[in-house]
Length: 139
Image (tube, rainbow, N blue to C red; front, side):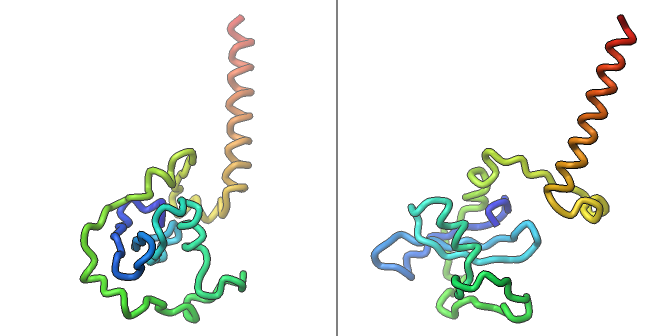
């Protein structure tokens, strides 16, 4: 959700008296819509942890989508949220990262970062070898 430039973050003063809170709605890289409620000023890491952990933080097993269902609390009336900011955490999330989205046909051949990095290293080595051999020929 932090990599969603269209995610929208609203102040949430109604759900805390002693701390500043906000709610963010957006899509994850996998296309799941998420709603995160977190206290502000606790740092970006705290928001990331809030996104990763559901109501049962002690259980590290992923729940199935059917079992997860809709956990939105009834007291969050989204129609009453005002003052939203699009992409509030997008720049911070993408700073220092090199997120590259690949086309679906390639994604099936390169299912994870390790596979992509391995292929790019092979390509980089081939390009470097081709450049070295070109340099030798021109002498």
